Length: 262
Image 1 (cartoon, rainbow, N blue to C red):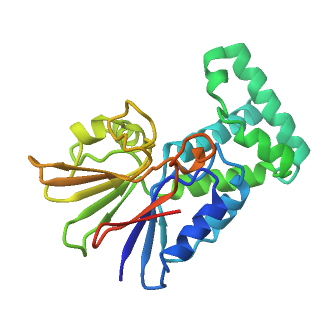
Image 2 (cartoon, rainbow, N blue to C red):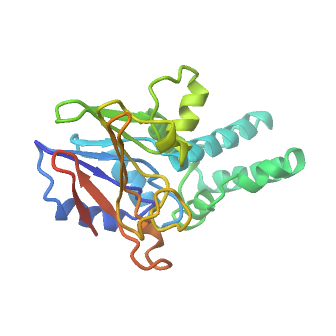
């Protein structure tokens, strides 16, 4: 049995399928995904449909984009209740109206929040192009919220934590934990870690110059000698492959730290 960890997908369903084929994933293996399944790319619906019925040996971990999506859908539900609309969950037309009303309501009450609502236009796009309904949006939001914020592998040489951004085992406040696990960047490496273990994450593309994990689009590896912790950043910017030379999807096999690229 091998454990594979794949980086940020960002609606790159076809690229993910190529990676699964490349690593020759067996039913006895596990594929752990670090989150950020949507936004930026153009296969959002394909990705969410696949996640709904993913193979039993695939373990999806939640990312910040997935959490944000669920929050956006929650805001739409709040607006629906506030105006007592009772929108038809099976109507694309009702969902589109509710989306526009939510944007308008936010613009009136909190213009700053309105700027960040559906920041990448994913919900608008799938409403208009894929004719999804409010029932679809809610179902996918519930799915994302059901994903764990980290996954631990113990049957390897080093115990391994797979998380979207960063891991600390000393955080007790749930909001602080959610923020660190899903959004930490440099502090994930300077403050986080697992004693005598390994942490595999994504979140910060290794193609971004100036970031702690910059490695020209290759997987970033860092060994904290004090904690004896090996860190990996496997977000190699796959969704930016048309903008950055060297951007690619990466996958790490935990047992021997072998890296695969597509």
